[in-house]
Image (cartoon, rainbow, N blue to C red; front, side):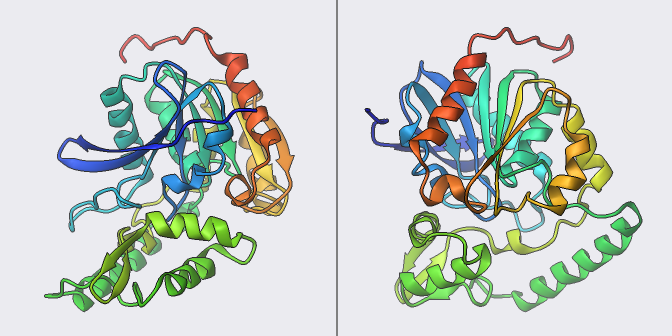
Length: 308
């Protein structure tokens, strides 16, 4: 069976900040917005997207990730800001009603998108169940204090320096892959790590360093609570499909905690593999499963809110 044509890369100016975007397929095909997870980039879909025929897949490097710009030094990284960036991208490309395929943290961004716009035709979460990082209601203020202290500590250590945070410079690709492997865990294949690392590395005179903003590793100062994350899931009105990894991040306690928050129309299926099963060795069966979801809802009327 044929596969998608070669990917294309773009840099788009979104209100003064550049977002890197990789696309597969041709405009006019089924529009799919592909959202990667935490510390990943558009290469997260490097092996799945070519298998998804009859689709125009738009995979951005979220701001601060991959080849996209970083936010200003006095700014942070919040899921709702990522959601606003994505909507600006959608408007810039003129996608109109579109489908979302989101991995990990991307499913949290997608759940916020469902609150901000009604132009999403369907959502498919890949080993994601919405907002991944939350705090208990009573821990929000102590968390804010801890996050502020950590941020100030990093700022003081970097005062007057143009160097990236320590530990982010490497002599060769293998060293960089080693650090990425430590962050992702042993269940991720070497090829998956290589694809993510290559899109996220900048070659310098004495080696390599990450392109992504190291501040992404800092905790959000005001994360959502678990109750708020569940409410975001409950308000997803478009068709929602969850394809979860049997050895992934959503198995066990996470699924048990979030399953009651899923809207009644949500459909859950399980797939062999770990958190990056869609990148490790994706089978055509996975692409066909997603393709059936998209085709099932393509052409579905999208209701727009009066004040949208």
